Structure formats: structure tokens, C-alpha cells
Image 1 (cartoon, rainbow, N blue to C red):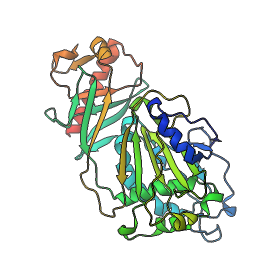
Image 2 (image 1 turned 90 degrees about the horizontal axis):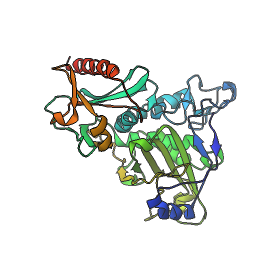
Image 3 (image 1 turned 30 degrees about the vertical axis):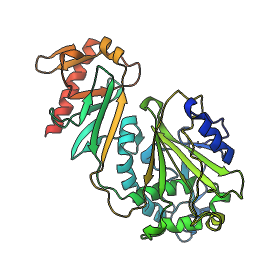
Length: 380
């Protein structure tokens, strides 16, 4: 199902002031959830009209399963009955670039897309490999080479980090994938004022000098605070005469919050375009009382039509050093024994497991063999 609800907005305690400023300017539309387990009842195909090209079932086909939010972001149930096969195929090409752009966040969170959980590769070698052991979903983080310095597992501080190079992607296609998702989530009464935004989706070229709008704000939260399926927040300005964008779109997926203003709303074109516009940013939103976290904040420009190549990304996650010192062990494949963490200067691989997961010694022995086999496959 695709429930829409009016819920209380909860912000991290240290960001409540900014949340109040944002909500004084914008009011939330009903929240959309994509993980309720059922799809809504869709229109009969013979009655469908595509909102992106205006053609009905007498001119185009509606055979494909169209997702409002890309399935690769974890959306399985939020489908649409207003996207024809032709537009679906065209817009689907944007998702190849979106998948590359979002790969690290999706792999870290264990988000399940069409093909299941994602692996993550850098320079042709997998560095994050999802697998199942004794019914438990785990993720292996491994160095491409034992002497590689791109990863640091620090068991003294609990700070872990690694860097890798993304495959090439085109920024504007990433933006279009996000924009198409936002336009799919808008109620029809709001969508009808975005004809120019739809035109932008269809255009293969655009004057980059007039694309200042193609930007997103990206908040990331600690991995344990993430979400496996997307949640959609759409906000509308309270004062129709205010010189700020009418709609702000926020999507929560994995450990990220992506937000941006929706461009080309008809009244906005006259009111705010070609002008310097300042509007408040929405902090990460939680639908239950928020944990005390400090999100990381980025402004990302996605207006370029040129491929972004070998973009280096830094990822990090924390573990409790006290728990590591008490329970952490390392498998030494040379001696086929387990040793304390402090017996090693460096670690070549680590396994991410769900919170409160525990293993017996017998399981650890079998798990070590599985990890060794996965690492050996990487060398082939």
C-alpha cells in the first residue's frame, strides 16, 4: 500500500530551531511511505493517461510496471498508473546514472533493489559484498589488496573509513531521475502547473547557463539511523505571495535525505525566476522522536551534461570500541585460529552485521571460511 499520512515532524534536537524556521515557511503535504507491503489499486490500463506525454491508452502502451520512486532506492510498492511505456523507458535511462551516484549509500545501508542488496566496486574490484550466512544478512568490506591504504579499520577508536572511486556518471541525469520521482509523487492538482518541468525531463539538451536550479541538498545520518525503503515528504509554501519556491521535495532513503526545490511551477516562473532567492533548508525529518545525531550536510550541483569520471568518495562508520575490545576477534587464516584484535596492526576485511548479532565459536569458524572464499574469488 502507499499510505499518505499527516504526521508530527521530529528533527534532531540540535536542529530543531532550523526545523521550526522551515515549517514557519512551508506546510507538509501528506507523507508517502513505500514499504507498506501492498500496492494501491491502479486504474485499468484502458483508462490510463500518461502525465508525462499526455497520451492515452489508445496511442501508447501501459504494459510495464512503473515506479514513482526508482526501485533501486528500495521502492517495491509505490507504483503509478500514469506513466506510459515510452516515457518509462526514456526516464529509466536516467536511473543508470542515479544507481552509480547513490551506490555507496545503498550498499552501506543494505538497501534491497530489483536485484537484491548491492555490492560496491572500486576500480574494477568489489570492496563491499553482501551475503547471507545462517539466515543472517551480512556485508563483507574488504581491501582490494592487503597493502591497500584506502581503508582503515581502527579498533582502538571504533572509527572506520574507506575511500573509493565511483564509475562515470552524468550529473544532469542524476538530477532528472530525482526530479522525475518528485513529479511522480505530486498530487495531480499540483502537477498540472509543472508543464515546463516535464519539458525539461524530455529535452536532451539545455542551456547550462540557465540551469542554476539543478541542485540538491544532501544530508547524511549515521548508518543505524537510516531507512531501507524511501519515505517522501513534500512541502508547500504557506504564503502564496512569498518570494520562495512553491514546493520543496524531500526523500529519505538509505542514510540520506535528498531535498530540492521543484523548478518551473507556473506562478514561480513569473514570481521568482531570474532572481536571487533564499529559502530555508529542511533538516532531516523523523516520523518518531529523533535520535540525538549530527547529520553531515552537502550542497551538490548537478547541472552538468559532462560525465563525471573517477569521483573519489569517502565513507565512514563507527563501531563501539568497548564492545570491540570485549568481543572482537580476528581470524588468522594462516594458523586457522582466532586471536584478539590487538594482535594485528591492520585488518584486511571486516563484516557488517545487524545490531545485537552474536555468533558461537563454531559459527565464527564457518564464517571465516566463507569470508576467505569470497576474498579468493576477488583475486580471480
